[in-house]
Length: 92
Image (cartoon, rainbow, N blue to C red; front, side, top):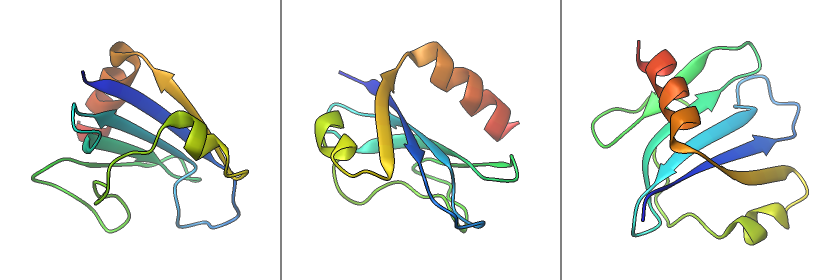
C-alpha cells in the first residue's frame, strides 16, 4: 500500500530542507519526494529527476516511531491529497 509522509526537521542549516514530504511505495522506498527549504523554495525528486539537495532515499523509509525517536525529527502520516497539492506546486 502506498502511503504519504511529512517529516519536520529542526535544524539551523540554511541550505537544508525544513520539511520533507514523501510518497512511499509498497516496498517502503520513496517514489516521489518534495522538500521545503527555509527560504520557502521547493525541490522535488522522482525516479527520473533529482536536484542538488533533493533525491529519493537509498534505503527503505523506517517506521514513524523510529523516525520520531530522533529528537530533531517529527514525522507523521499525511493524506494523498495533501501530498499531491504540494507535488503540483513543486513541479509546476
